[in-house]
Image (cartoon, rainbow, N blue to C red; front, side, top):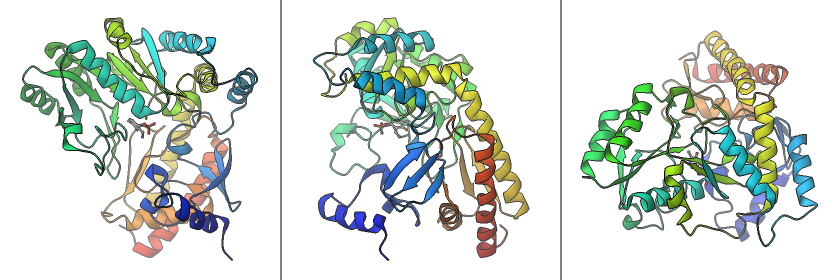
Length: 408
Ligand code: PMP
């Protein structure tokens, strides 16, 4: 019998280029992933064939309180009843900017947009407007979005789109200093993610000497330090992901988890960059829609009131400890990297991802949605019992992987 998913794929192939594209295109994952989903509820998602999954991707980050969180949905419904896309923003834009300024110590102001790429691109524009310089230093392989300056697959772009970028190696301060030297006084900005979360690679937490060193380097060369907190923001620390290092960026790009799945991005910055930010022409038809802003205010307040990052850390620790115990018991060598709220698991000796593919396919079949080569995301909806339910199934998935490949 043909599944609903297969039928939708077939119809999509006729009317959507490639049938699907971008980061949710299952053609670029390992086998076994459904492409189309019907609904989400808390930490669960249901595909179009009615299969239920404990969700460890959270829509690749946006869903931070669980799908359809009541407090967010109430705020959304209240705003929708008054209108969404009007001739000007609602009062909610000011309220949300005030909330961000109150929550994030490095924020004296906020601009809003739709996607993370909007915010990182805006950040570069503010930095260039403020400094009158062109060059931006970035970590090699770091993802900052899909615009021509930063897309990892440059098809359809030109060399000129990336002409003013110089790479350094993450956690290697000397290489960042060398990149700054190579720019010979022209550094507008250093853009960096709070930890290294490149696909297909172990995640790496930032070393204090690196984060503090980048801050000092930016100050020394008169460049703007941009923290790209699009992926990690609101999961690790509501104040910003480098606040624990005592490192305050000049600009921070936010999106993903900011509005529990509603489309919104923000750029926050310091007073010193307020004038430069005000001088930009940056806008979009949907950027001032009130509903996602109402969702964002409810999301950030809920994360604050319920100590969201700590709850996600608890769930993430239970998950990590459970997976470690299981892998050891099955004699499988794994590596778990990154913060526990944004975890990842890789198998040793698995360069062609055969073990990851086998384990992930088994997890999917058993109703646990994880990813073989991209980091996962937890939400505050993941309770102890959900982690326990997931672990019962991951244990079976490890058993199948060990049976197929033997202990590694
Ligand atoms: N920066 C980082 C660190 C990201 O993880 C992402 C999205 N994965 C982006 C920027 C781009 O965000 P968006 O896909 O919303 O444009």
